[in-house]
Image (cartoon, rainbow, N blue to C red; front, side, top):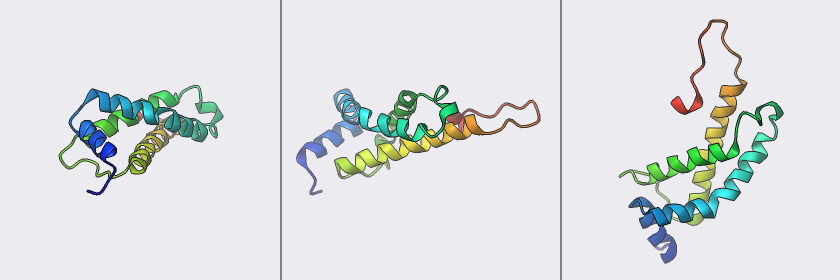
Length: 118
């Protein structure tokens, strides 16, 4: 593959469901991703009390771990690409949460679907 031997071993651990590798990934990227989520969320003053950046992070991290363990899962060959993928997942989850809380309710009594059920 030609990638960093440490990262290659780390990725094998993530793909095989190794809890230590997942914990290391969580600890390594958590603060950076949460700060990006909070920065984007700052533009929506009225939604900050409804959307918790840590919840968005946890959802994105779970999606990454599940996706990376799939046979045709995410193809990642560097730490930078892993971070970018995780950030992209998190920002997409944030966008869905903002759409959910920002969307006007329909005139009927229908309740909109929560973003995690899409």
